Structure formats: C-alpha cells, structure tokens
Amino acid sequence: MALMIKTENRPGPDRTLHLQGHKLRELLPAVYQNSPFYRRKLDDCGVDPCSIKTFSDLERLPFTTKSDLRTGYPLGLLAVPEEQVVRIHSSSGTTGKPVIVPYTANDVSSWAEMMARCLAMTGVTGLDRVQITPGYGLWTAGTGFQAGVERLGAMAIPTGPGNTEKQIEMMLDLKTTVLIGTSSYGLLLAEEIHKRGLSDRIKLVRGIFGSERWGKKMRARIEELLNIETFDIYGLTEIYGPGIAIDCPEHCGLHYWHDHLLFEIIDPETGRQLQPGEQGELVVTTLTKEGMPLLRYRTRDITSIITKRCPCGSPYPMIARVLGRTDDMIKIKGVNIYPGQIDHVLQLTEGACSEYRIIISRKQGKDSLLIKVEGEPAFDFGKISMQLQKNIKERIGIIAGVEVIPQGTLPRSEKKSKRVFDCRE
Ligand code: ZN
Image (cartoon, rainbow, N blue to C red):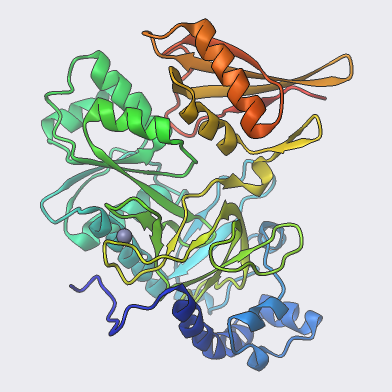
C-alpha cells in the first residue's frame, strides 16, 4: 500500500480545500524566499506571502501564465541553486518560444510516484507489460510514463512514437498488456490491428490515453476494436507532465493527487474562483515542486471539481474529464463553439462515427461552417447528415453544412489529431 497516502477519514472536496489551505501557510513564504521570479511578482502586487493562509486567500495572488514562463525562458523561474537541477524538459513550442521546466531529484521522484499511482489506479500491477508510444527526449510524456512503470515494478516496453509495423510486432511478440499513447494513435493502432485480423492474437487488457481531448465515440471504438478498457490520463509539461490525474475503473471523473497539487476552478473571463461543481478553467498551484514551483498556473483547460466522492473509495478528489481548452474556442456567426460540443452532438447522432473535421470559411462576408464526419457503413449517409444538422441546430444553435464520408477516410494521426480548420482570413 506504499502508493496510497494515509488518510484517517477520507476528505470530501470542501475538507480537501480546507486542508490544502493550511499547506499554503508554509508554501508561500518558502516560494517567496527561493524564487526571485515570485518575490518580484508578489512585491509588484503588494502581497505579503505570510498573509495567504486559506484557500480563499489565494484569490489575492496573481496568476502565472504561459507567457510568464516564456518571458522567463530559459531558466528564469528556477527556484533552487543550479547544482540541484538534475534534468530539464520542454514543451513543444509550436507557438513562440518553448517553455523549459527544471526538475530536482525530488521532483523527478514525486512525478514517478504520481505516475505509479495513476497506473495502479487503472489496475496495472508488476505482472503487466506496458508499451509506451509517446515521445521521449525533451518531451515529458515518454520519460514520465517510463519512470512510473518502473516505480510500480511493471515491465516497460519503450517503443516511443510511430513505426506502426514495429509497434504491432512488439505487441504480439512481447504480449503487451497495457498500451499507452495519444487517443489518436490508439485509434490508428486499433484500426490497423483489426484490419490485419490480429485482434484475437493481441493480449492487451487496458489502454491509457491522454494529451488530447477525445470523445465518447472514439473511446468506444478503441475499446471495441481492441477489446480493452481505456483510461483518460491528464497532465501538462509545466506541471511535471502527464500523470497528475487519471480516471479509475468507475470512470466518473479523474482523481488528482491533492498532496502534491492544489486545484482551483476559475471563471476564465473574470478570474474569480468558482465553487466546487462549477465549470471553468483549471488553475494549479504546486505544493511540493522544487525546481520550478508554480503559483496559480492557468492551464487553459476547461473542467470542474467533482463534489461527489467516487464509488471506488479512493481518498483522492476528482475533476471532470477536460471539455476543451479556453483557446480552442471558435467564434462563428457570433456564437462561441468548443470542439467538445461537436463530439457531444456526434454522440447523439446515430450512424455518425468518432472522426470529424470542423471547417470554417468565409463566403461573401459570411461565416460558414462545414462538418465532415465519417459514417458507419450500415447507415444511410443522407439520414446521418440530416440528423446531425438538426442536432447541431438544436444543441449548439447554429446552422452547419454536413458532409458524411465513409469510415476510415479521414487521415489518422500518430500524434494528436487536428480537427479544426479555420480558413477565414
Ligand atoms: Zn474512483
């Protein structure tokens, strides 16, 4: 039971926030002392670190944003002497400068512990063989999963990304029981295995997927084709990497590690704290991170803190599956849409598959929206199209064109799927 924290009485969400509030009394003065970046930031806002004593006091602290981290490139947020840094990781940097995250030996260890908890939560044991398909190197995912698998005592099969031929060969020869990757790559592998008639020969029991939002239909298709149970894992490079939350076999939310991380939900427009249960942007404060501690980091991920206790009995609180990112929002014809809403509508539409593209264009000064979606072979594509248009109108309040195409025709990805194409200039 080394992976469980000791809790005499399991705290509900309110109690969790209260307990975490207490930790702030020690955390704030320490961060103020160790981090020149936060010392300046708090001084600029006139906040006395000793005055932050409760969860609601946090509201007086400024947020930390991705742009703060970019401005601090490469090591401006370092909060320990350099000799204590044992590793760095970096975000992909697709927009602007990447973010460099320094880790101390304790940080590397805490992360491995959190990842091992994630794996244990899904039922992985020392007897499992875990194929790790995310990238290694500066990218956090591969290394993070590997450390968790080793900490748990399972067997890591570190294939890394791509090379589907090799992936399937290793999966068959080594009798992989757990597959880790993006949901897009999970789908690609599932379809390929199915196409080659290998479904009966693979030994997979579970899949752990993350790094992008995936709808219920996609999840159901991966589970059906591979005959496995899937789990949604959450994390971000700025806060260790993947492994800070995961869903358990009850699948009613993602448990997070509140002994290491404090989660708040805020209104992304006003920045005000929201109540447990309300949906908004997740803001994370690290409680034990040394190399680059973060206070009130804005993740831009939309979720909520779940107020009910999980039937699985875990003492760890939960967030809902991430609905999308605040910067995924598309404004069209004056209506704000999240791609997650399209996922939801597809779920309600019989015969529509999980894979789709959202294409936005402007014709004669007017926005137009086209949804290209794959249809199941047994269904009439005309009917799917009509039903989907009706559902989009009713649920999202917008008129969209729909084009239904045969299943398997949209490109598959070994990384994350790009689903939104905004062609407006
Ligand atoms: Zn649970």
